[in-house]
Length: 403
Ligand code: ZN
Image (tube, rainbow, N blue to C red):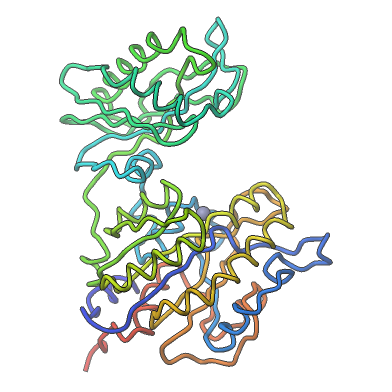
């Protein structure tokens, strides 16, 4: 509701906004830290300063008790209803490598894997083969043709690639073929919903031909398919909020979700946080009024259960804050797309701290950017898709509702 109304009230002028996402930043108390969370344990002088000069709150990416993937987590903070706009990882992977998906394309992620002589999965990632080998394998699969359906195979990174089927009447109602564990055969291609007959036929034909091409290769002699997703036209942030948006992200999946939202991609040189800050600055100088910047490694360290590394990643982000301030955005928002508590080694449903700096704010309520202070902050607890209206309002980009 809030973002629909915000869409109607949005103005095509006003301040500029930076949305910096520390992926999976939210956490829970860590026993080894005496019950502090990584955000509380980290030394973050720059974030602390920003917290007291801005306002804190916490968002629920999808809803109470719901654990989101990174796709819905990001769409939510971009102002989309994450339940209505559900996007499969296959489509995100394809968009992330700048493949121009068309309306009705069916995309899936490929994992090259190692099979034994009976076709049993020995390694679901084929020992994380090099990206060079991935490109070679993809080149071998590119000639595959299927009557009535165009097929595109594209490399992503290491053992990951993606396949896109283009044709009339395809459907995403197909189960993954990845058994999810070793010691099993890849699963048959089966429909998960009615009306997927054409898609099942096309995908089965592709897998049959691909298996013949791969069977004598080593170490990757098989493939697993996951995340079938049909690409449908998607309103952009320009359509919804009259923004001219850009994205700076190092990983394909986040570039994918950003390009769904209509963000122009800016690449960072070097491919690290400093490069990302420079790219954000360039986007602003190019006249972009909304820039999304993604920091991945807070999530990876959470998923590895490495609380010390998560602290280090938060501190690394903190050191980038002065550079972000120097860019000259009117409003800076710092948050995460979900929580990834180290003790869980998984995404979780816990609310995510939010900091908004710039515009008229109830400042001085908070002194640090932490879960505890965010829960008591001036912005309160809100749904993830209400973050966009809050950022737009801070930037003076929302008109008054009613007379
Ligand atoms: Zn994430």
